[in-house]
Amino acid sequence: MTYNLSTLNGEKITFLPEKGQICLEDARFLLVSADGLGTLTKDLISTLGRDRAKGFLLRYGWTCGYNDARIAQRQNPDHSELSLLYHGAYLHSLEGSTHVNVLKAEINLEEKHCLMESTWSNSHEAEQYCRHFGLSEELVCWTLTGYASGFASAIFGQRVLFREVKCVGMGDQYCQVICKPVEEWGTELEGELDYFTESKISEELEEAHRRIKKQNKFLKQVMGIHEELNRLILEGGHLKDIVEVVGNTLGNPIIAEDRYLETLAAWAEPGKELSSFLLSSIEPASDFIRKQLAIIKREKKTIDIICKDHSLLPRTVTPIIIESNVYGYLSIIHSTKVNIELIHLIAERVAEVIGFILLQERMIFETENRFKGKFIR
Image (tube, rainbow, N blue to C red; front, side):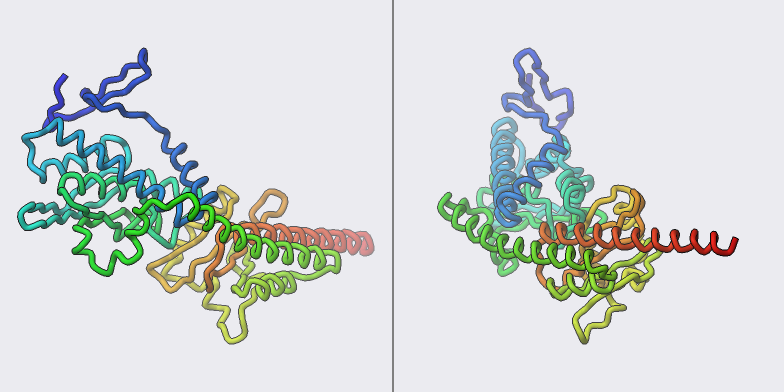
């Protein structure tokens, strides 16, 4: 079987179930579930932290792309570097990672010039990230950009990097990437190259130790909030008391709204205008907000809402549930840097307490009405 770049299609992939192999020419490939990779990313972020997971996935993608480029060069020795770059884009689509639309591609080995600009649609990585974490404040297609960077570097013969400038994981309609040699990126790459450097296990352990100490501090904060919430429930505290205690402890604005986005209770530091944090006050972002709230209502899960095209601050939003129905929404505003996992824990616990208090108030109201009805009769 020959590998002809110009006619590459699904027929060139050989399935050998009796040997447990899938081959593209002499290269072995695997069919891997996108959901499985999404779970792997989620676990890496939870275990290693976001930065370490990002570095791991960038390096993994780089290695895959670099190796695929070497295979393409070996199997297509007569093709130009530009043709091989297009081949890398085709492989990305063929492997089901994302659909690539090349907007611009230039390469000149003598002048050491390489420029490529593409859009990606249906990125499996952005899709999976949003499924597990909701929208991100940062670009999230780490494996895909690593793959493209490794492939292009192998073809160009020196280090070039793809970088996202738009990402579905941040709420954009599509992902967009630009490729240039490392030297041409200049200060824009500040800190980024560190992600491509493998760290020693001792450094990983030291970093893990620092993260554990930091998490212990947050967990103490969570436990303190938990104890305060229990105390307020026993003392018959009101919604205003609940959000005030949590807001003061976190130092972040917190808002409870019903399903019609009417404010039930809210807290912000003195001097801050509460109305600017309300979901109902963000008219330009209303369509986007409605879609996000529909996800929360349908799936009854906590998500992070980020609307980068508007002044709306990022926030964690969790449903307030009463008798299996979504009664409203609790928002914790990210006015300061937050630990997302722990903010989720706090938000969900506070929403439970608010739901409990609202249910109590409803039961008291219904009981009083029944007694009034009996008295009148």
